[in-house]
Image: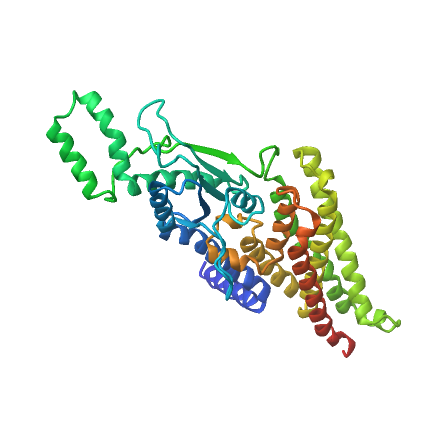
Length: 429
């Protein structure tokens, strides 16, 4: 019986030795879990420290009254909001004018911000009402429902800001109700209350309703997806599609390593086929395969989930071609820098899953902290998803896809040139 523990210990030692020699398995066992934990820790851990993520919102003051001005200043100072009343000033340029209601709506439609608040004329005369049927000028909340969290957060924060920024207004409106239901105030009591309100018009208030009704009337309107069905289906089709395209391109590029290990690559190169031609041919095959995969994905989305594919066909073709080219060049690079198929498989798994996590394929980027959103722009996933969102969600023309297409095509060309340089080792081997 004493032999069994010794044999088991030997088996365990051999297993760890094999794991240490297999760098791919070592990476998948230890590096990948830590990488994913770090990514999602930065996403959700950052949210936990700050309570709620800051929401970008434009504020337009059409009323220009003293009351609306106080509300705007309070919104700009609210730590949960990244509020602004005008576009950012360009370096060395003049200060741009404040947003108009039309300009704010355009910004939301283009995806520059997820929400905008329009304070209408007459708001200062009737900002709040505490009783049923009270006369109030509703604030308009314009939002993009592709970010379903933003409108709810902005609406709730607005009610809180009103309570803290306009306590005197709330008290003045509330005093008639208090008199009505308390049996009336004496002249001295009324004078004392008026004196207190005059002395501290901006004193913070810590009380208020805890439900979603609020003191300020809010008129919510979706300015992007009002008439769309299954609004987020294009986002998911693009996110999942690009992630699996990266895996497909990696596998297709790995055929170079198979040919190198079997000796077929030497025979191909000796048959007057240059390495540049070989790489370009394999990349063309990978790009066509990727295009077919994305086409099938979106056709299925159109047939089963009612995605409006055919009215957006030009934009879909442009984005699919650019995305397929970029991921195909990525697959060639992975193959050219790897020395064995096992090494390529482990490296590609780590890189692709990491790119998909921070690029928006697994978790929407608009819910990530701002720093993580910027890091996500280093991935193909983010640019492809943004492009498809422009096509299917925002109904933007093909010309507006220029930034996404330029990045994908430019990155694809750069990666192909790098892959060609690394592939020289097969020419001289």
